[in-house]
Image (cartoon, rainbow, N blue to C red; front, side, top):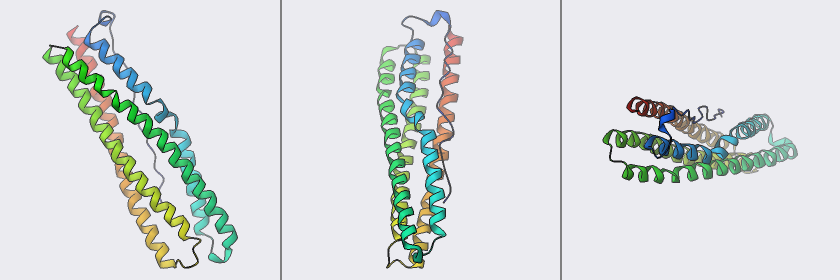
Amino acid sequence: MKKWKYVIPLCFVFLLSACSFGESTEEKLSNILTEIYNLEADYRDVQTQLAETEQKEQANFQSMMELTKDQKEELTTQVEETSLLLEERLTLVEKEAASIKSASEKLSAIDGLLSETDSESEKENIKKIEEAFKNRYTSYDDLSDQYQALASLQEKLYNMLIEDEAEVATIQEQLEEVNKQNDVVQQSVETFNELTTELNKVKEEVFTSFQKED
């Protein structure tokens, strides 16, 4: 099994000039984006712990694969420990997902901002950011689903290692399923990271455009 992690954070660098304060569309948008960024705090906060838990689980798994069924007691202990790490990992992912969900719900404020402005150029800029956000959050939903599917396959594999009736060939087949799903997760991670990069790029372009219009 390969290790994976999110690698590209969502960043906000606002390019607000002194004349943009007040009730300007630029400031309203920047305030909304700041709120979204803050709502993703839990998502950012769990990344280090999540990576560390994955590394521990991976190390345990490698150790388990080197044991034989004759070492049943040791194998059972390691499976139990590894299963606890998996549970811990899924708890962190739950916290992460809740953070992303809260942030995504804030996109309704961007819709509200669209209805408030009469400027076509401003509308176009707002729509660009909204679309970039929606693409990123849709990608995260897919990543979350694929990750949960991978965790289920991993849990089944761990339990197989201590089942008396489980044959080596069956365990190998399950391991192959885990590796296939891990590849799917890796691709989902790459897509999510690419869309995060794209969102950051769009954000910078939009605020640069606002500055030019001031």
